[in-house]
Image 1 (cartoon, rainbow, N blue to C red):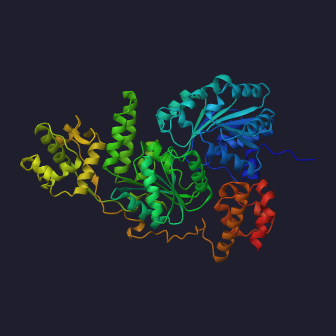
Image 2: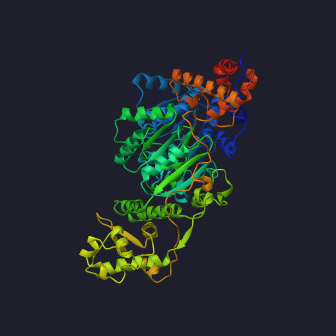
Image 3: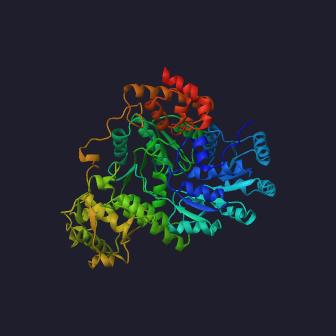
Length: 626
């Protein structure tokens, strides 16, 4: 006679997923949802959000409460999570456009029979009349266990990934008030949280907010100075032979950057909405299944990407706001091991982002909100104090400077020199004012700097600007410093750019600077970013094409680790899954280090659940014993 499977959350966590204990607020969230409560969960990427609905779904299914419906915006995320659940012995499926009619009908029969534990669907499918009728039938029979709304920030107009299809999800509260709902996101400020609660009718839900700190991520921002070469140097010095994501703002820049990195010997792939769907799918599959792939992409790539060993996320252009930056950088280091968030940033980034907001057809209230969010990101980029403190403060979390972290930010590792730029700012604004007085002339940053530094160019001569009282008054300030000053003045709203040529215009706020009421303390520009320890060389050690184990191993254990990886690759190919879904590197490294000699000992290793122990246990022991 078969012993009934336990409905206790701790037992499910251990037996299904192979983990010995919940982390942070996970246990409290799981208990609340199992008991039928609604929840809004804010938890950083890599913090274990999925377990917060997967464990309750399994527990409620074992109590004969039916299927959990998970709303997810991406086909890739559905495929990988369903694959991982099936590997762990949990019956799950997805319904999306990638399936044939026969496959859809088979899954619908399993759903209506209550045999599925979790069903993943896109928001647009969930609200179709056919799907709602099926959910009505399930609820009438007591077979609808819960709704999980993943990437819940997509419902908010203030969020960075607003999706109109999410607005219709309010129907879940209206139509199925007795079915618990859990909404989850990695990123939401106060405004976005309030919008999620309002639009999803989660007014009675408990709100769980985990720490937004990702202590394994090192944040760094460098001033653009041939950004491609800076990026290449960063990858070669810090992450050779490792997986990473490079974000660019335009499709053209994605294509050009991927081609250039490839020409420099890296395996770089492009991903954006302009590529053929088959090409996008092929590139995404390679990124998930192979090692040392650098994916160069627009923000169309990334949401729901569960690859745990992404060692860096690089931004070649400024994101729209801190939420987008945090969400995108959070795709690095999901396995908890050291990772980098690196961004190259320059004057053009500020100009472009300001212009996109100003020229958008949105209402003025929305534009004001977006300007405020951009200002917060610019403050983070220009900061000369701890970046982590500023990042966490944006989400309402207090913290101490991260100088003591293993992965401290660039400012804490190498505190930048600063200078008082107040007088320089006044000179720049005065010069722009003189341009305007001189027949209403308007010029861009390059010409302004030439005039301030007393450089006689053809353009200066043609416009008679040698005769201006401001000609040469800033000769003691370098061109790089002037660009920092102008960047900051635009970021703070004292200057704006106009027209096709980005000419500089004074704003009403410029008066405060001209009067001396605003003090500007800026970071001193540097020729190149200093690396950890300031030695000019990375302290992480030279990289090789064979990725290092996630924990220190001696030579014999390293050989066992590589043998396990080879075995895992064969299993992954056979099952058509990314290798990390079979076992994470950290689990294989622990096996290689402890070298278990029995199934019981193997089952005690984190990440080895009962189904995987049964399926792979003897093979693993064989590999370890060879």
